Each structure stands twice: as structure tokens, then as C-alpha cells.
Image 1 (spheres, rainbow, N blue to C red):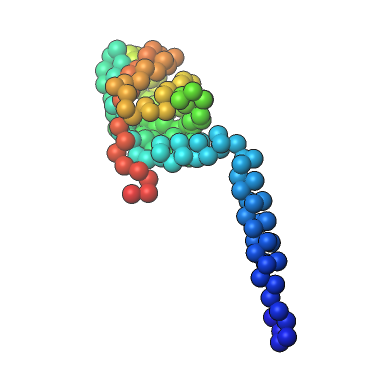
Image 2 (cartoon, rainbow, N blue to C red; image 1 turned 90 degrees about the vertical axis):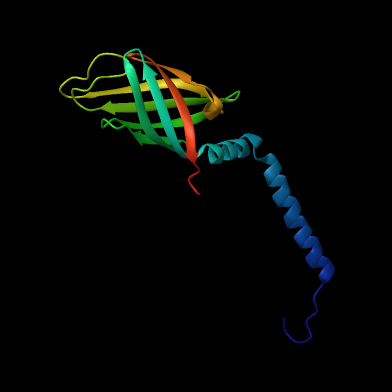
Length: 156
């Protein structure tokens, strides 16, 4: 402000109040679902131990859930790559591609071939999956039961 200029405090306060009302109005117009998804994703983000069982054996994998993505690996060289989305009604829709190396026994039964095996499983799980005793997942080779245990948050 230059010398002799005056500050109209009332006009400034009205302008700031108008800006605040516009910001609140924009937040109200934004679907609450967006906020819920953000909160849900933050709560799910983390490192998980996956305890697996099938008709022919047991297995283990480490997984990372981060912002709708899932990645992980198992001790026999398996890799997992996928995503999850909010399915509504306290459920998540999950799609995971599993890559298993050549000539290994599968917990569902059978062996992978000389080229290994790649398959995608699509399923739904409750969004409180880590508090479930186990989750049953149907794969093309047969069902598996999974217990997911959160080891820690990503930001810890």
C-alpha cells in the first residue's frame, strides 16, 4: 500500500468470507464417496503377510497394498500383481495376476508346466479383510483360503 492509501477492513473481511463460503460450497458438492475411498485406501495401505492353504498344501506370500494396487511375492518365486477398488457395501473388488515359476507344486493341486503358469483371479472381499479368519478365493485350479495379516502401515 502506498502512503495515503487506506485499507477497507470491512471490504477485505467480506471478500475473505465470500472465498471461505465458496470453498465450503465446493466441498459440499464433492461426493462424500471420494472422501470415504481416500480414507479407506489410507487405512488399507500397508505390508501384509498372506497365509495360504489349498487342497494340496500351504503357502506364504508378502504383499503390499498401496492406493488401489497390490504387489507381492512368495518363497518359490511366485509374483502377484493386481488392483482393488471399492465395490460398495463394505466390499472390495480385487483382481490379481499370479505368475508361478516352472515345475512347482501348487497349493490347489497339480504342477506348473515347463513354462510356468500365469493366471488372473477376480473376486470380492470384505474391506475389513484383515479381521477375517480367512477369505476363500476361487482360482482356475481350485479354491484357496487366505488369511491376510497387516504387518505395518507404509508410512511407519
